[in-house]
Length: 110
Image 1 (cartoon, rainbow, N blue to C red):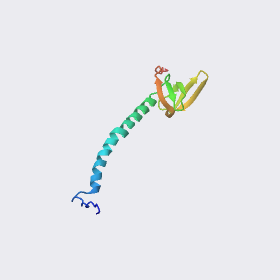
Image 2 (spheres, rainbow, N blue to C red):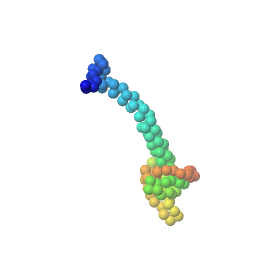
Image 3 (cartoon, rainbow, N blue to C red):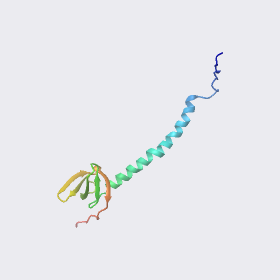
Image 4 (cartoon, rainbow, N blue to C red):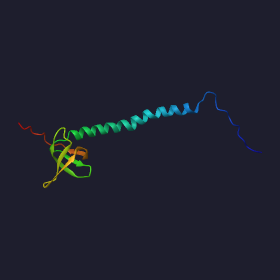
């Protein structure tokens, strides 16, 4: 004797596309609020921090060097960073990975 289960017909009106669309539509906002939005906020904070770098700040560069900013002009993409007493390098603001310490405000020249 063979054990065959009867094949049940699909309930009328149940569309497999619609049944998959509802969970997908619910997952998109959850994914946005848990992954995309926090990442956008972190990137915005990083951009603001890098744009606010000024003379005297201690920065960590993307290659791991730690130095002190000697020259930083608003609107200029380059910074002059002192790695030690004898070595100064010019880097772009994008090379700054982290700002560790805040320095003194820039003195205005009259």
